[in-house]
Length: 600
Ligand code: ADP
Image (cartoon, rainbow, N blue to C red; front, side, top):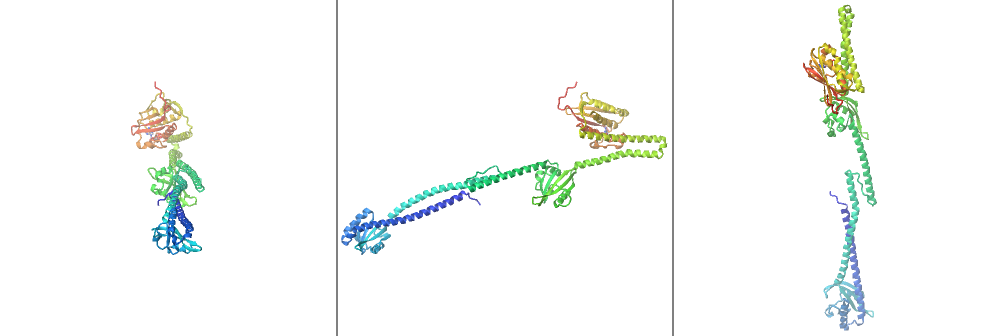
């Protein structure tokens, strides 16, 4: 329904009241005035009749008819009144307008009848003589206590009407003026009442649209002023509450989105109420579109579903580990609690998700490492134990074999020693790197490489392999020379081990703006491509038997990797089977960003 403006409700009501009052007053005034005027006219006519009565009382006889008629005509003209003199018989003696002889008997005229009865007769009726509406007043002519005739004065009603209509017009004019004035005043008043309300409506609309900074003007009337103040107060409180709520929500959002743990809230129908970015990326759900969807729609995982069901029903554990199967399996530790509203009613569940994939991975590595170490140590120990047993059981007396066995025992002990040395060195490097205890100093790279080559000289000679060095004198690196030398030695040792005798191993340094690359290249057996990604893992060996045969521990490359990482660099390998391998240590250029000096 279309609603009317308050102004158009107030104003017509005012107008109707004004019109009704003015019309009532007008009608009442007009009728009263008419009554008063008629009464006054009758009195007037009566007074004139009295004057004439006094004049004619002495001569009111048939004999004076001519004289009396003349008197009627003279007086009638000057007083603008019709004057009629009538004998008690009803015969007309004189008349100001007509010839009395031609007039009929007036004995039955109502006013004449009354006058003849000694009273004042007043009558308004149609005059057949004059053919118009007249007002008549008749009084008796008394002489010596006897009624000797009647004096009748009259005027046409039209004259009264004319006079009254002038009065009516005046009243109507006054009324119209009053209406115009009252209409204008009531319009002004209606506006004054409705305008503040309209302004309040506009202000309230702005509040409804969320603009709580706006303030309503307070009108001076008590009710509207109170209402405006109450609305302003309400807006201020709402503004404050919304501000506080928004701040709290922003804080909460900032906390949730900054959390590494995934947080997920669902309702009792398992529809998503909220999930933070971490939860989105853990579960592979788009955070922006997830809200309102059920979790089943977004992710299919029976374990997670079961866990949520258990949390929602309040049974079973609130902590569990679940696995998300995808291209890579992810392990999540989930803990859940029931969400309740302020009235204690259950409204859903809150789940915190922790990605423990890395932890799991580390645990796996550790387990594998322990197994590997045990295995690596077990082989020489079994061997040592076996030969000791053999010696004890009598072989000790067989001199020749005894020496051979002791040599094998010694070799196995060396091997054990080498493994333990390498393990210790690896863990020392790891620990020092973790604590930041590895001192890096800028120094001459060539010197380090020459030392490493010298280190391997014995083995090189044994295998008749030539080691060449290609490094300009001015290449400098920020390094721990002892450790870097060890890393290069390890690479050289491998290059010599896994090459046919009589070959060549090249050490080359390539420097560019960003890095210094130390390449150790051999032309040996090479490595099948499938093994390359895992080559730097502890105890990883391509050919276990050959490595063992050559006295390898499987830890050499792991040590290289850790040393290079402690220098802020990385190590890479390129290899072609039966053609050879190139291991490259990439170290950051200590003069990165500085213009390089021209070489002499
Ligand atoms: P190991 O003590 O057995 O040499 P490393 O960690 O040094 O252990 O090397 C791991 C494995 O990588 C070796 O067992 C070997 O199979 C392979 N490898 C390392 N360097 C070379 C190389 N230059 N040529 C061929 N294979 C190599």
